[in-house]
Image 1 (cartoon, rainbow, N blue to C red):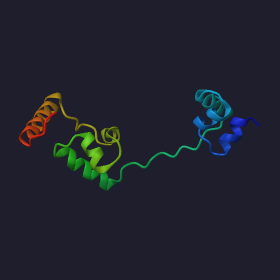
Image 2: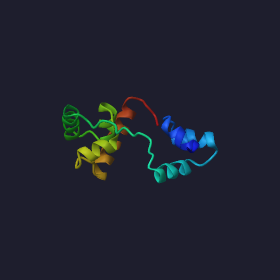
Image 3: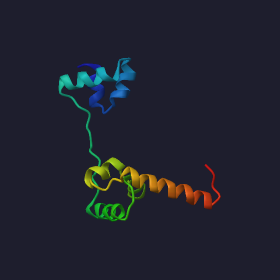
Length: 111
């Protein structure tokens, strides 16, 4: 049995195997694919129904996808995928940036 196959079965990552064997990570991935061996991949859980509802409320209230991501977790792209159609227009983004800039000036924060 090849060393990379044994290391794969031990649960080592492609990066670890490449380092141990002194080969490129792509070589490990290619050899695994040719042999039908793949590292176990666990897909992260999708947002729950409650999280989707909370995100929809935030987005409808004007929050951006990155803001929803910071508040509820997951990435902004996850929220875009599950709840499309809430993206800001360039005009809305500009108004928001200007408001943040003005609020910073009133608070004495300089940038």
